Structure formats: C-alpha cells, structure tokens
Length: 408
Image (cartoon, rainbow, N blue to C red; front, top):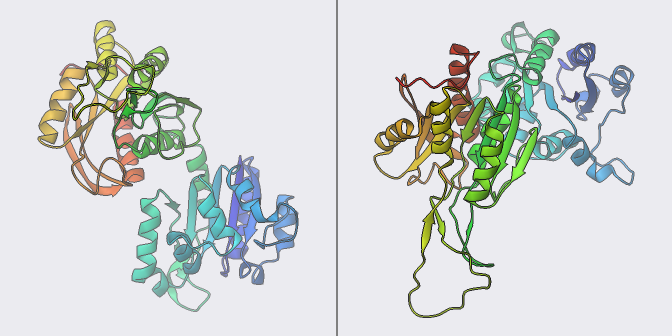
C-alpha cells in the first residue's frame, strides 16, 4: 500500500525517519511530504534515500504538473500519516486552511488519516488545540497519543511524539484491521431513490447518501469486502470494492436481491421510496388545471423481502435496517424490526434540523433484540463507527452463521 508521511516542524521529526523505515519493513511504499519547518530539523535527502522517492517540500515547485500534484497523490494513497503533528498543522487541517502541500493534501484526499501530535505539554492541553483535535476526531481522523516524559523544551509531561513502532502499529491497524468484519462480504445501500413521473419530473426525498457512505467507508476500513448500491446522491461515494448506481426503487430492489445471497451482511441505509407513479408518462406532462391527481403504486419492500427469505431458509445475511420517522420514533422502529425480521434497526428523527437527511450530523437510536441504545448528535462518521461496533458484536456472538435470525 502507498502511504503519505507528512512531517512537520518539531524535534520529533527525526523519529519520522524510523516511522518510514518501519512502514517499509511491513511492505508499504512511502512518499514523504515535508513542511518548510520540518526541513530545519531533518534534511529532505534523508527521506529521499530511505523511500527512494522524491520528497515533496514545496506546493509550487516548477513543472507542468506541479500545481496538481497534491490531487494526484491524494487519489492514490491508502493512508495519510502526519508525524509529528504540531499544534500549527492540527489547527490548519481542523479549520480547512490549505496553505502548503501537506495541508492541501489533507483537504484533497479521501484516504484515512492518522495523526501523531507532538508539542509542549501546555500547548497540548490548551482549549484551542483540544477543540481542533475533537473536530478532527469527529471527521474520523485517528490519533496516536503522545507519550509522557522529558521534552525538548525542558518540561516533563505529555507531549512527546509517540514511539515509531507505536505509530507503525496504529497504521497497520487502520490498513489491515483485525476484527469480525475483516473479510466479510457486506452490501450497503445509500441515498434516495427517484421515481420518475415523466422525462423531467420525479418523486424523491432529501437524502444525500452521507450516512450510507459513512457506513460503507467504515466497513471497508475494517477490512470488509463492500458492495455499495447507491441512488442519485449529492456526494461522491467512498472507495469500496464495488459501487452499483441505481435510480428508482425497483432498480435498487433488483440490484440488492441479485447480490444478497452472496453477502454476509446487508445494511439498508438508503431512503427508498415507499410509492412510485403507477405509470411513467413518455413525454413531459403539460401544465393543466389547478390540481393534478397522481396514481401511485407501492414499491417493493427490500428489507422485508430479505427478512422473509431468511426466515424461510433459517439462514442468510445479517440485516440492518433504518427507520426515518418524525414521531413515535422508537416505538415505530421497534415494530419495524419485528415486522421486517431485522437484527438491528437504526432509527432517527428526521424532523430535527441537526440530524437525518441533507446534513453532516445525525442522532440515532439503535434497536436490537438486547435492547435500545440512543446516540447523541455527532458526525455521521462517528455514528457509522458506533453502528458497526454493534454489528461486530453480533458477528462475534455467531461467527459461523452471521445471518441466522433469532426470533426472540
């Protein structure tokens, strides 16, 4: 795998050399990205000799492709590590400032990010730094906590860059996670469906696809073989094994059902339309009177069909459904779990302005046979991780038959 190692201006920069060596020993390729301050502590030629790659130190190096190099690297790396990460770089990437190659690379890449902070004890404890770290954590950034001991500034306390072996181990855990989802075949649906009325108009909803994409991304990070079936989303899908694009509920039904038997987990995060126009007009329907009557037909219930098949056979994929409600959220979601024979139902109140469709945060209640657990408003990335934590627990309880349905 290709790893970008970002090195910033701190005394711990010399340890980044050993991080690069450790990553190479585990079979990874490393490209070093150094800030101008980092070169005051370690020479670029040192990293170039170790990595056998040109070290990137300037966002505006001359050359035909220099101005888009950060995009090329961003799209090819499997992981971005920043070690050491100073308070300066943490503040920049937390707040979207991209004034050098490394901060621009962070903004441009969709690869997972691992940050190893290193700074003075008082700086690490400062409210501004803690807030920036929390912001990054909410986006899914992982951290290697600094160690305690004698610091270069003469202080004794927490702030020393973690040992290279610990940073390499954390990178390995992100790239090759060991857990119940590793190697599992997982299908995730995401986004809305659009039900066409005529060649111009359709019935749809406000789903952006972010929640389903966050789940697919997190499942892939945990080592799952992810197939993503996505409706017409407003955001780009994450890098997974396969992306299947669909438009309407019927098309999503066929895409999911044709693949479900090969899956060990199916997560229905898509906001699938319950009804669609009974017939699609071949031409645009002209404007007529003050009112228009539409005849709608019920769309196939994908989760219910999967649940019925599993009940009939006694086996099949583990099922996770979503319930978007505006009232009696937990009661309706609990009933849905029973009706659809799902293992978990993730319920959310879409009447809230800070959760559900079209926003980057969510607040959900996870309902399973062992009880109900509510999660407060947080990023959809963190919600996805929490959902998959519960899913992995179910897989651990019954690893041989991941989708065996317990009727209790």
